[in-house]
Image 1 (cartoon, rainbow over the protein chains, first blue to last red):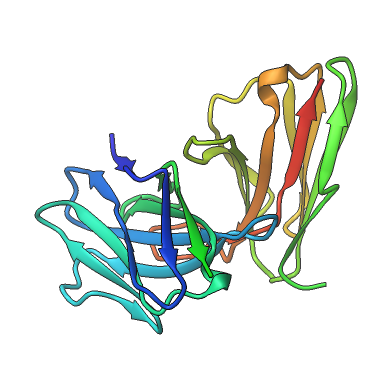
Image 2 (image 1 turned 135 degrees about the vertical axis):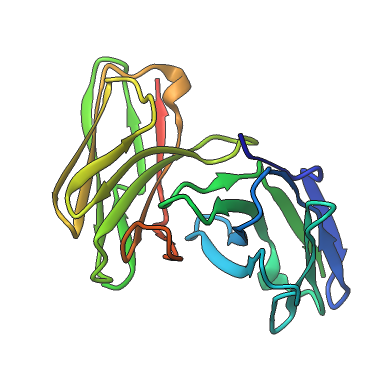
Length: 115
Length: 115
């Protein structure tokens, strides 16, 4: 069975600095998707960035980028120029390409932005 | 209203009460999901409906009873709950289920406290 591990329950970063959130996963499959979701306090969970396992190029979305290391089964999220609005819980999730909808979730990392 | 809405946002109920959670999506999607989110634990998928048909019941106790009258509405009926059922209940929707990529859009959740 697949598992997703986020080893950092909480991280803090100074505003305008860069922070990296870690995620590792375990799978025997070769084709899958990886996601980072953001859940601000009392607000909706939203998708931040997505990576297809067959793509070697790391996904980027504005200030958010990932470091996808398929062999190491590592999928970290880098947030550049951190802003106060980035404060949230961040969840890493895995989905097999052979699954209809099942997302395997990590336990989350709480990101604190210091002004 | 846009996106995925959930009511109520907060609910306190006794162990002998009966209550219902409501979810509505305004995205024209065909698949809807219930998740349970407990502190410091990964999200747990509870139920999945695709075109109003239940396709997943993830070993959820019978005190939780879902209902999907149409593709836009999803209910979670609650009765004789236990204190350990206290959690944030999230609703999500996606265009469909299938081995293609279908992003899940989340509602803000209902914070349930069982006393």
